[in-house]
Length: 355
Image 1 (cartoon, rainbow, N blue to C red):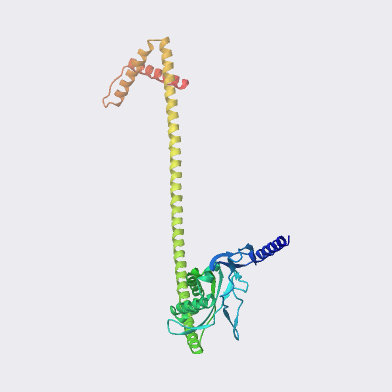
Image 2 (image 1 turned 120 degrees about the horizontal axis):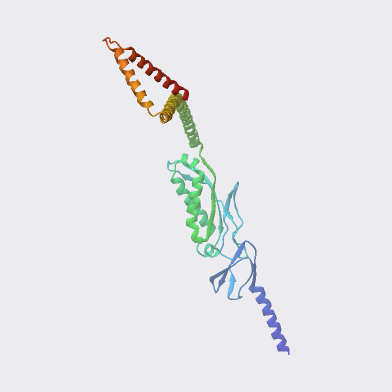
């Protein structure tokens, strides 16, 4: 019984030790590296994690702290790794000392930069680079020295944003194998020594004066261009107005000619209609006269012979009257002509009556 009790107690103690040593709680925003039999194994993420005691252990040593530049000296910043082996996964700030660099035009420039980054792969940041903080600072200084050496002093002053983005891109490419993401790089300050700053100030002043003169000349040229454009537009508008007026006059003349032609056409049309009606009435009267003659002939068929005889005698008498020769006409013949004339006159009266 005593041996069994001891065994139970030992099992309970061993279980408690397993739970105490095997269960690991990782705080939020951190990670822990687990080594199994001395080799990298896996990363514990925030929350409750279980490891195998004796076989697994949390890596806690081998990390250094990095320093940030502050007024009055250098003081250590919060470490990326703490004594429990927690590795910060939050955004970090790396701020090296202000350094003196040589530009392309051999001018000495003081540049102060700060880099913001975060660790995305704790294993690479731990095992793939020795002394992460100091190596990172050296990389920033080396990259900044190369970027400053590619440009002259005046360009560096005016191209701060461009240089910051170039630094970020180069640092990201260099630190990808370290399991690090470069979020942004900012240039806090850029300045020269007093002698160079004075010369740059004079050069800048001369440049500003030159630009002001250039701007004034451009303004005068633009004003002249605007005046020329205004005159051009005025001439165009005047020509267009004259063109429109000529078109209106031509259209008025054309319309007037059209109206005159239409009036003449209407007048000729009315005259033609009047003549047509007159001829129609004349033809109608002749037709009625012929109808009356036809009706009379039906009653007296021999009348047509006498009528034609009288017409013939009338023509003979008319011819004799126009002749230069004098004729003696018997009284019987004169009486006959008189009768013929009476018949013709009666015939014309008959026609007028019928009309």
